[in-house]
Length: 320
Image (cartoon, rainbow, N blue to C red; front, side, top):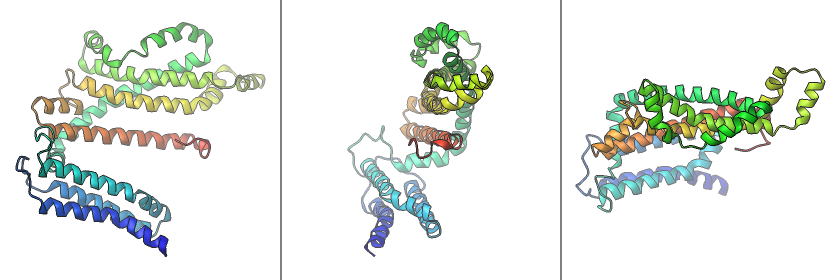
């Protein structure tokens, strides 16, 4: 009985935090310096969060896994709502922070809603550039790492070169890339690909080199060809390291995307953030940062899902 009561109280916490947020929103006077929006977008955001939580609770009545998940996350979600409450209170009800650099949540959420078409266009342009560069970098990095890890003669010649040029920050190549490639788009694709190439190469070669040589000797004794050993021994055994390189490459690719879009691009989220900063509209800057954070998080989540499918044998052995 006590356990059930405690569970109910945990589930009520987010709604209590939302109720307090709404009360403070209307009961406490604004500082008068924030730009007024046509709608209370901050409250709309809280309503969406509350609706999603309520939906999960209702589904959890029929699904034990979802019920456990929402009960486990309820305190964290409450913390997020309280953080938004404090942030909104400081920016709209007090003058502790400069209004120019710290816009209200109404302005940030409102910009995401009202400018959604323009923002989606820039997101699409960024994703095209990111996916193209990532695929090139991951493919070349995988092949390079495979050659370095499996063939000693290739490692002899290419390992020193890789160790010299790989650690160089991608942004240091921007002037050379812009002067070498005929178009800015080509230069940007190269820079993102380079950011992905090194971690994928490093982790792929490291994963193959760490494989016990007995595995190759046994397969060779049984008549396996070089191609068979690469496909059926080297790559599967090195797959955890390959995915690790892909994770590192993903994070590097997003950092590089922001850098290259702020240098000569005329579209994309990085360009949008830079443009909003230059005209001192920081609600647009924060909106762009939120979009980038969401896209990066979704991309990593997708990679984790793919990894879980490919590496099902790791369940219960390695925790990520």
